[in-house]
Image 1 (spheres, rainbow, N blue to C red):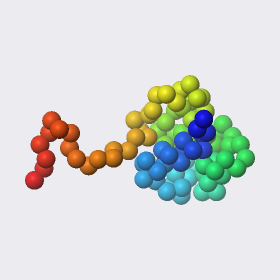
Image 2 (image 1 turned 90 degrees about the vertical axis):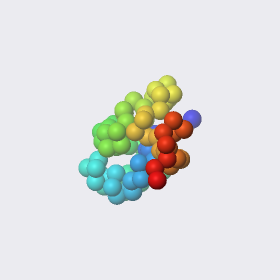
Image 3 (image 1 turned 180 degrees about the vertical axis):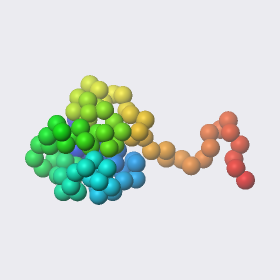
Length: 91
């Protein structure tokens, strides 16, 4: 099972954010973000809520395994830079 710290890290990377950028946006220290991502200690609900808000995901998505089936759009990274097949390529 994927833990909240791993999910935080995955979404942060998908959004091309550094730990410092996430910490600033969440109003937390960089060390707090680092500890949450690596699973050192147990982050408070307030900390997880601040991180979820800064990442644009629901708190329940981070902490409820049943809610994780619904991947938030905010956490998806577009892999291909190619336009969809129904749109012409820019010149």
